[in-house]
Image (cartoon, rainbow, N blue to C red; front, top):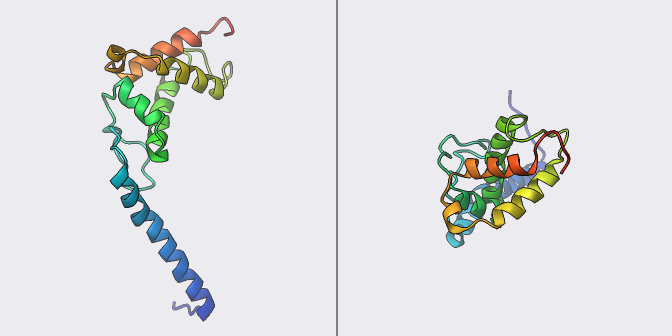
Length: 142
């Protein structure tokens, strides 16, 4: 079925397409020229958020992405963290009912910021679980 659009609607539609394509292709290229690449793998498509290749991430690499000015790097670090939180909830640390995510985020930030050089080379998951288990145990409030 063919659909004919009024000229002004077609013009608006073309403008929308140009804006979307520009945001998808031009802006990332300009940003990429000025920023340091993240160790966390880039998604193949905008809808792919979790990357299986993000294994063996060090605490230092995680910290760089977690505190990056680049929202894509931060988002991948947050997804990496979410996987750790969900996998270890009720095992290494208490749970989301006991501790709010903002509290967890603030504690992780303050503890990871203090890491010394040799700790930055350890696996991020191991370091994060250590902070979680020390900071958010079950049985008593922090």
